[in-house]
Image 1 (cartoon, rainbow, N blue to C red):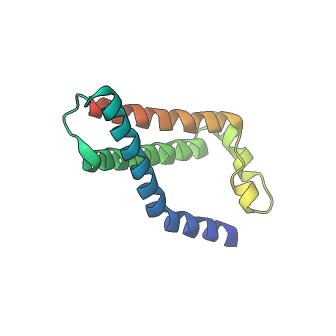
Image 2 (cartoon, rainbow, N blue to C red):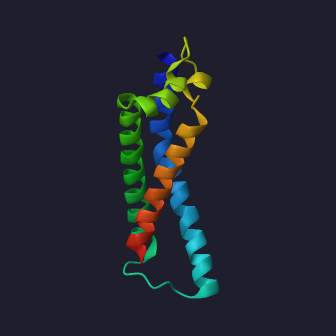
Length: 123
């Protein structure tokens, strides 16, 4: 329980710095690409729009991961993969991050869907 609490507190403390870092990297990449290729054809532009789209993507991804986690607890087929995560007799930082490879692929698919959803709004 202690490790889980520390992990959650650390993730909460690091959210804003990580978001700011990701936004600054996105701004640098976008500016570099604009300089090399010209301005993109998008309805909204600039760092504010990129920040809004990034926040939207994070919210869609988080909702998708929450729903897949909920389904993993409720559907037998998904539970057979998810139970690897719950099989440790003692929760440590290492065992808390233990997942079945199929579940990792599932989570990556959710993240890709969120990213493509964002790309659809940028067009």
